[in-house]
Image (cartoon, rainbow, N blue to C red; front, top):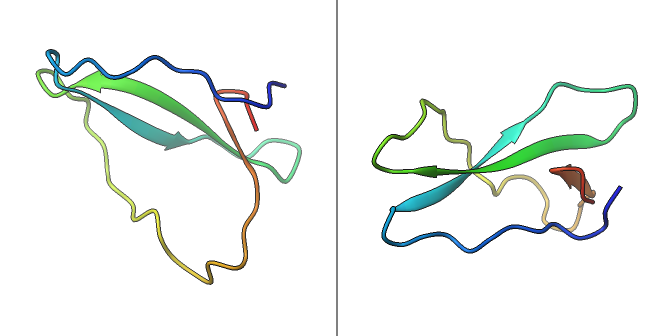
Length: 68
């Protein structure tokens, strides 16, 4: 598993944005997600979730695109 998430910069001309998708729970206790790029020209259907909640002193690592 990589320890650094790698992705390319967003394309302003294509009005790109990213969506973080929570993946189904596996055999371990890690929270796994995928981070994908889309264009505002043809966006997928999605539901937004606030990225800030709970006690900010309590944190845990997550796995995004196979990187912790």
